[in-house]
Image 1: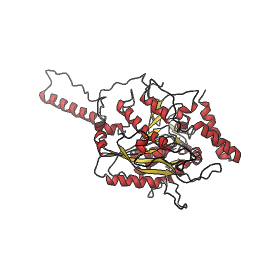
Image 2: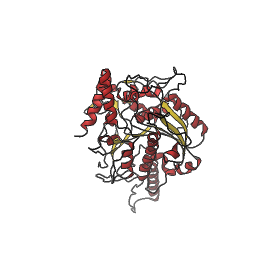
Image 3: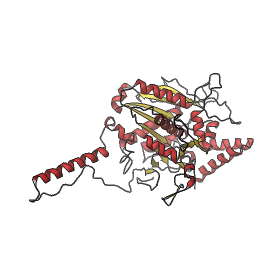
Image 4: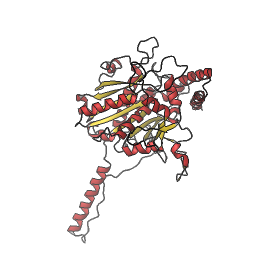
Amino acid sequence: MASTNIMPNQNMKHVSFSENIRTTRSHSFGQVPLPKKTEETSTAARVSVVAASLVATAALATARPIIKTGSSLAHLWRQIQGSNDWEDLVQPKLHPLLREEIVRYGEFVNACYKAFDLDPTSKRYLNCKYGKKSMFREVGMESSGYEVTKYIYATPDISFPIQTVDSCGRWIGYVAVSSDESVRRLGRRDVVITFRGTVTNPEWIANLMSSLTPARLDPHNNRPDVKVEAGFLSLYTSDESECKFGLGSCREQLLSEVSRLLTKYKGEELSITVAGHSMGSSLALLLAYDIAELGLNKEKTPITVFSFGGPRVGNSGFKQRCEELGVKVLRIVNVNDPITKMPGVVFNENFRVLGGRYEFPWSCSCYAHVGVELVLDFFNVQNLSCVHDLETYISLLKCPKRLRIERDSTTVDILNRAREMLMGAQQFNLLPWRSSATDTVNFVQSQKT
């Protein structure tokens, strides 16, 4: 199990998590030593020193508030949502409130898998099995304190000969908002958007496309230096305008609903929380960036992303812009999970700078992770796919000392999916996809050794 320490990385805050602690760090926030009293010290001088010390103490307390273990979420939700980039919350030990919130949002994402219909004989195949009002109850989350307001559908602008269903939009997640009763416990009205991971063949292709393209999500500023992975962007922006009953793009659905909810609850204390697993983490980050870039959170509503086993999404320009916009990202990552190392297995944030000082000319074409990284460590050679399994992530966070490797029948087996796509690519001689699929399988299998 990985221990809690700061891993050296020039471009990312990176923290390992375990119950065992190797390193600790002492803090003296709010503790300013006063000079010893001497007979020569005048009364005015003593008053001046004390006043200066109190001002310094207040400044330190304001800059970096101390979070006690027994503090309530209602009072500390901004720090838990990353207002200080989770400073002192992930090390030397993961704060219990933050742990609970990570698990809670992980369960919201897991609800996508539980409610997703994978029965090919069902009329709801590749859609949600339940209605919005009953979904949380059907997946065992009736006490979540949230209400589902909208289902989200998406499809990449990709045609693939071996897919067994048409490429129309498939249910990919939902939007929910905290109830009035939950607002008191949470300390604010929380709008949560969650996304599942990869299931269909077009989605797998979107995952395997590894070319960077300008995001161009702001109509007033194209920002050509801000680039994202082409497949993820396609999944986010493609629509079905040519279909008779086609939906708008995933992006249009989301921005419309988020705008509606922000308007409805205008004047309240609000937060926007976006969570996803695997490919869903990429959509979560694109949405968070999009909302901030367009300025939809006019009241400075905080935007936080909880990413579970997510791949890289964009280049260093994308990373820098997310930071400038104040998008907070906490990446929960298994060190043995190959998906978190893609795309950009070689050309990434660690490659773009030589010796920590000299930046290569092609650095803008290198992928870069965004945000703070919370690292887990689990692996089971008998069950290789567990390294990417969301339920395994959640199980370890819930009970680090007694991890049980169990998988729900609806959870996607990433290795089998990659093999299935590889076989289809060989049959149709789709060389680019075949090569990408081969690389994925080989990279996953290399984690055995």
